Amino acid sequence: MTIEERIKEMMSGELYQATAAVELLELLDRCHDACERYNALPPSDRDAREAAIRQLLGRTGERFKILSPFRCDYGFNIEVGEDFFANFNMVILDEARVTFGDRVFVAPNCSFYTAGHPLDVERRRQGLEYSWPITVGDDVWIGGNVTVLPGVTIGSGTVIGAGSVVTHDIPAGVLAAGNPCRVIRRLEPEEKL
Image 1: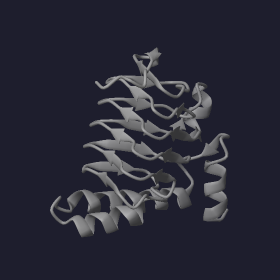
Image 2 (image 1 turned 180 degrees about the horizontal axis):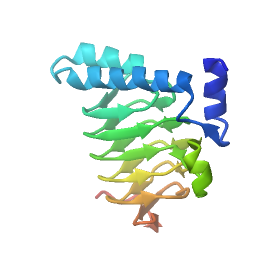
Image 3 (image 1 turned 135 degrees about the vertical axis):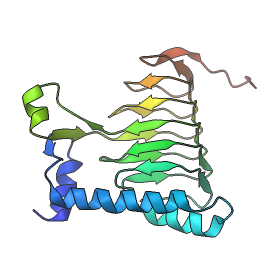
Image 4 (image 1 turned 180 degrees about the vertical axis):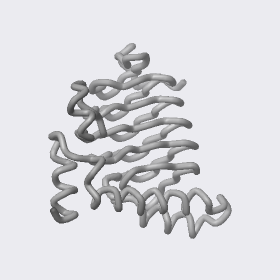
């Protein structure tokens, strides 16, 4: 199977062979090496850091910042919009597309997982997994230690409270928190804090 066919299979949303697909394992190694190089660059070397992260990610805005350490699986499946900011320790398992809109703020220790495994132990033993995309709208703030699971969409203008585990879609313009994450209330335009 060609690398293009492996990637298409991985992003199909169906079960695929993850642990024995040599082509995917080689891509993982390359991306993990690129993350290590990025994380080793000093914060003051802004030009080198920007070049390294732009080369790693699939699409970026003109203005964005991702603090180290940062880890991802493939990189090319990640898209960030204008004025995107991610604090320390962001992890993205981007077996499927992960899209962040404009003016998204991600607090420390947040994780975005597109990959999942079957509940059936026999299929897990075979090394099968699936991947479903994650989409984050514009003007979203994601609090510290949040985990976003496969297939989730977070609507524009929403705030996800610290420590949340986002297991399903969250609509636009709300405050949501908890494990599992749920809507607490609608955000009002006049709110300042």
